[in-house]
Each structure stands twice: as C-alpha cells, then as structure tokens.
Length: 383
Ligand code: G3P
Ligand code: CA
Image 1 (spheres, rainbow, N blue to C red):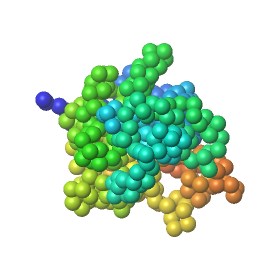
Image 2: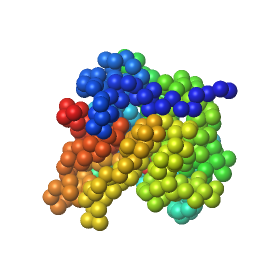
Image 3: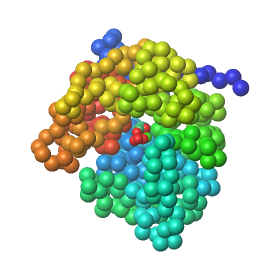
Image 4: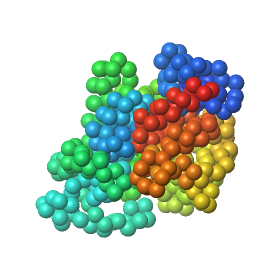
C-alpha cells in the first residue's frame, strides 16, 4: 500500500502553531497567542505550541494511568493525555507504565495471585514481582490501582483502590464520549512499552494496537493521536500498519534503545540526535521525545546548563520535539529551581518551564498539566 511516510512538522502542528514555535526559536513567526491555539486558524491539527501532554494523565494528583488521572488531566485542560501500553496474557492492551504491576496495583494483597510472583529479566534488568503478561484481562480487572510514589505524593494515596487498570479500548471509548461532549477531538499520546520483549513472548504490541486505532478511526495521518516508543523498530513497524503520527522517544544521551542492543546496532542517543541520526528518524517518524537533559544538560551540581543544538537540528530535520518529564516537586526539578528543604514541596516549576520553553520545544510532558498550561500561556504572551 502506498503511504506517505513523512507528513512533516508543518502538517503535524499546523501553520499557525508552527508560527508560535518559530517565535520561540527567535525566528520570523508572527502568530498571536490566539492563532497559536490553532482553533481559530482551522489549519493542521490545531495543537497549541507549546503543547501540554498530561503525563500518565494528571499523575501529580492521582494514581497514574487510571481513568481518574486521565479525566482530571482532560478537565484541567491538558492538550493531550498520555497512555503507556503493555499486554495481558490473553493479548489485551492495558494502560500501565510497565508490565511489573507490583508498585502500581494492590496485587500483593491478593492471596489468590501469590503464586504468580516471579523474577524476570525485562530489557536486561532482573525484576521480582507480578507481571501483566501472566494475568488474563479478567484477572487483572479484579485488581485496583494505587499511587506509585507514596513517599513523594502522600496525598494521592487518598485515591488508592478507587480505580481499575484501564484497557486502551476503554480509553478510546472515553475519548470519543468526551470528544462528543466537548465538541472537539480528545488527543491521546500512546506508547508501546518493551515491544521487543513482548514480541519474543508472542505478544507483539503493534498489531493489536493498529487494529484498535483502525476500529476507532485513529489510523490516519490527521488522527488526534501520537504514537511513541523508545524502540525505533516499534515505530517503524507501526508506521507500516497505520498512518498515525509517531514520535521516537530518546532516553539520556549515552543510552541505547533496547532494540538496538538486541540487534547489535551500536548507535546511542548521542548518535541519533546528530543531523544524520535525526534525518534517519525523519524518514519514518514525525517527531522526537527526548529526555529533558538532552535539551538542557544538567551541570555537575544538578543545575540547568547550556542548551544543546538538538531543538534547532530536529526542527531543521522537520521533526516535532516533545521532551519529558516536568514535575513540580523539588526532588525532580533542576537544583537551581528548588525552593526550601522539603524534597516533596513544590519548587519554582514556572521558572524551569520558562527555561525549557525558551529552547523552542513544541511541547512537554508534565505530571502537573495545570501548571504546565499556565507556564505555556505565560510563554506565549511573552513572545
Ligand atoms: O513517553 C514520554 C515519557 O513518558 C517517557 O518516559 O518512562 O515516563 O514512559 P516514561
Ligand atoms: Ca510514557
């Protein structure tokens, strides 16, 4: 089948939104904040720039990857809501950051599943716990989600036990309902987790994902959905199945994608963010999602250092940039934006957002989408 492989950054974001991005780069963009919303222009996908992606929903306030977290992110105004996907034993795609569900569900309190506790090596790391691929969907649905980092986010434990593990199909149906209610499309940002690992188990993620995208009309190049993966081969596989825009995630600068390690491909993230590497990515994807340290490395004392040329180089290759992840708590912020001595108190998140937005990125993943939205609005007004 003939398929356009590279709609490009302009087609993804829309001309008005790109204008705002160009201004952020100090270029010749002329879009007003209203135009940058894209809604007024009617062009392209209509995403504002910088775009705010609700990381695992609104995971700063609710247990991640629950319908409660997704609903709050949408209600707060996040432009896109993120899902990470792993499979069940019977091949259903469910929303979890990883297949090890020990920390994010109450599985350890279920005596009927005690014998499922096991040790596995996932992407080279030995893990002991309970894993989605050992549970049918019906079994998984008897569990309840809980806060991943209660030591940092004690308040979120109020919601422990309230929600199930959602399936991706339930999220697609929710997004359709919410879209009808709101009279606009609800954007999703969907990641395949450990795709090489699962393919070896006979639980390939891409085919069932593509099937769902087709069933819910999110398989076209103008779909309100970004696909994402840390494994480029997963994106390449997906792009043979659907035309949905896709983003290659890039971890820290000296890391290597797990599929590269398995295939003896020596390239690191440092290679992939060079012009040649970016050109290679632009051959099958529309964007990159780098770790924030790839955009602004931290100094030895944990402060923000000097921005790299990655934003400029990625834009030159026609790629959108959506780095991850901003969180409001001191412990996660660069040292120069921490306030006071409590690691779990909020620091100067607005100051950090400003620094990142000034690099010209097109959007950002945040656990606190309300903070990110205010920061994005401030940034647009300042241009
Ligand atoms: O997908 C963007 C960001 O979420 C990548 O990091 O580990 O939170 O999935 P992770
Ligand atoms: Ca993710």
